Amino acid sequence: MMKIKALCKKAVFLSILGLFLLDGKGFSAELYKTKLIGHSDLQGRPTLQVTLRGNYAYCGHHRGQAYNPMTDEVENNGTTIVDVSNPEKPVIVKHIPGARNAESRAVQVVYNFQGKGKDYLIRNQETFSDRYFEIWDITNKAKPAYVSKVDSTPAGRLTLAHKGWWDADSGLFFGSANEPGFRDGQHLIIWDLKNPYKPVYVSSGWIPGQKKSEPHPGEGLSLHHPVVDFANKRVYGAYLFGGDVVIWDISDIYKPAVILHKDYVPPFQGTHTAVPFFGVKTPNFSPGYGDIRNYIVISEENFAEDCEEMIGHIFILDVTAWENPVNVAAYKVPEGDFCKRGGRFGPHQFAETKDGKFFSPKDNDNLIYQVYFNAGLRIIDLSDPYNPKEVGYYIPDTNDNTEPRALSGENAIASNDVDLDYRGLAYVSDRYGAGLHIIKYLGR
Image 1 (cartoon, rainbow, N blue to C red):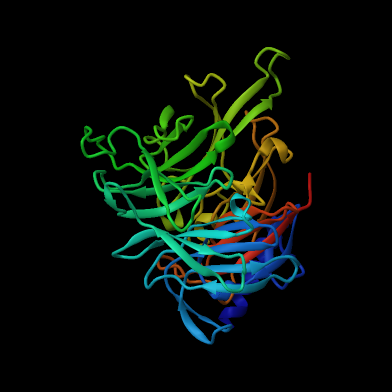
Image 2: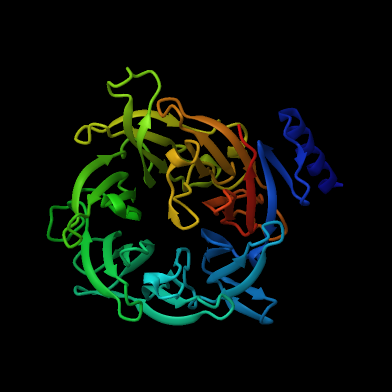
């Protein structure tokens, strides 16, 4: 009886919103101008980063364990490779277990690396005692082979290894990590992986106050991860702790130089992701007089469940005058009842790549794809960057694998990351175990 009452209550609420729709795949979902194409349960493993390349999705998992029916064993959460050649029927090809108690959140892949016909995967491994990045040969997707680890700089062994960006053309890997001589928190470290069997340290980049020899900044500083536009010699960094947005010029790869630094804390949340959006013809500027403008799109991250903190923003930073960045717009999903649904509500991560290549909103109908925890996937039109508008969304429902939240006791969706394949389909991972949702945007 109680279950029936709960279902009825949910149905009444959603019908009032006009959003109680069945997507045809067995899920009850809230959606607008989107459609669920396929779903993988990822064996119920809580999933953070998802990376698409060709016909495969690569999913990095939170620490923990789950049963793998392919091996008939309980395995430490690691990295799952999913064949999505038929996106309606994704097939798990392989789960690569992680180390005991390891976070394997991050995953990057390169194909036909350096023109030698080999495919590689790099993932982070952060246990309670050891931190490093790990490289695997995935040329045969069903039989990955361990290659090497990236675990040190000339200063010593890494103390953190969070996330990174492997630039296939140059062979350089840009990681958010920490090394001896720096305060707690992550900064930029660059390695040369042209020979994946013999990683070579290149250089480090940071902002003043991160190094122990520098005056203490008075706040914790930690780079979440870099986004690399190698063609234009720029690295875009977002500091989740500290709230800083930092742009490094890597014209000299051995000496990354800070060329832009803006701090959002206080008064706002910590910044999670920063991506460029350059050469945009902007409405309501005089033609030929400043109407072609450059922007950085910034996402914050919320941590507290049930909205027990300030809800984050998506910011649009006009950097046409590089030396004088100006915040010109912000976007937030309306609160509605999301604070009562359990789990987190607020922005998290953009799609940074499409089929493994640097994602350009300008070349993709001026759209960005953003996940928003329990508000699912949001698709935002930046045709006028001074006035961002939402044009579609998909909020999955929970399922039997969803982990109840400790605070509310509710089952909540937690769309954590999104990436795009060569067909333009969006792949959304779930932080609480609801799997991988494959979503098609149906257009304006």
